[in-house]
Image 1 (tube, rainbow, N blue to C red):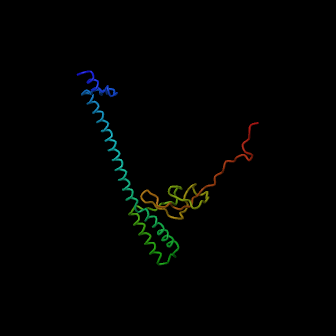
Image 2 (cartoon, helix red, strand yellow):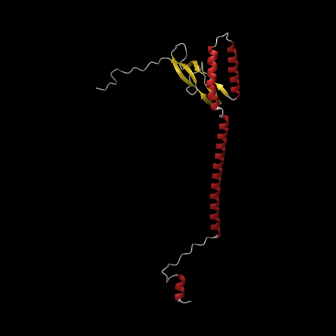
Length: 190
């Protein structure tokens, strides 16, 4: 082969530089590279599987909570009906024959609601809890403990552990002496 043919074959006449060939990987280097890629893919697969399991558990918990608390809107509406039955019972005369019927209906409703884990909050005689009680009034009786619920104005209800409606209560609060501050304000050093 002449020098011209050799130069043409190498691309010297066209102005191109000869391309460098990539280094040839040895068999052990290829195995090491493929093992690294396999380990990376296995790690990504494990992460994807964990994400999928977490999503599946979260969706399952949401479905269980939806089922568990599905009666919440009905319970909120029934709380008003229970209030009206209690008002009718409290305002009926002792000898009124309707009083016994209203009491039976109220008792039957409370038993039915208990089957569905709807419970009345027992407020009177307990310490005021802002998570369960709504203070309607505050009274001051030194014979009663401080922050004690002395009366219930409106019943509160729970569905399992979730608040349907807080109990409207009257809370006893002892008068607290405010720390006396100087009338002129803080004095500056002279």
